[in-house]
Amino acid sequence: MSPFEIIAQTTQAIASNPSDAEAYKTRALTLCQMQQYDEAMKDLNTLIDTLHTDDAEIYQLRGTLRMNQGDKMGALSDMRKALDLNPQLLQQLSGEFKAEGKEHCR
Image 1: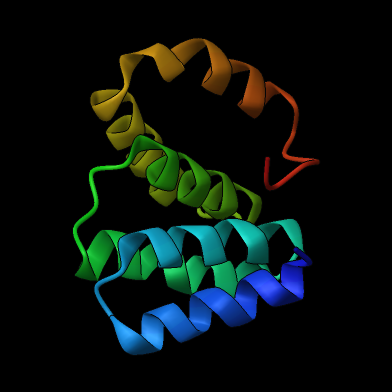
Image 2 (image 1 turned 90 degrees about the horizontal axis):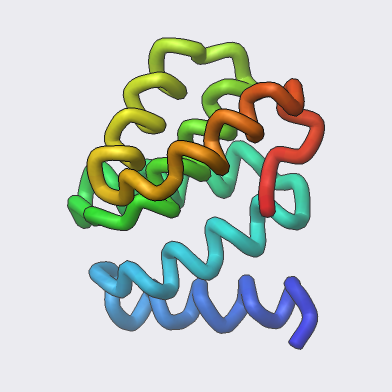
């Protein structure tokens, strides 16, 4: 399935069920891979601020995007939350910040 098909499918799922966290997550990851960072950030914010997700991956991704946008304090807050939710991320995160943010999404 192409990224555009994934976006269309997840957008339709969200329209049908605005609380579909998995659809927001899939769309955010796809938008990020398509380098549409502002749109991805909107979905990540919805997941965290509206749907109150406890998904470490979501906090990690938003923290990475915030870091690359120059929001170091926001990035730090998100990365701390990601580590609270999944302490095993420590090794991965320390390498990610040393890489200077060349790659926004994984």
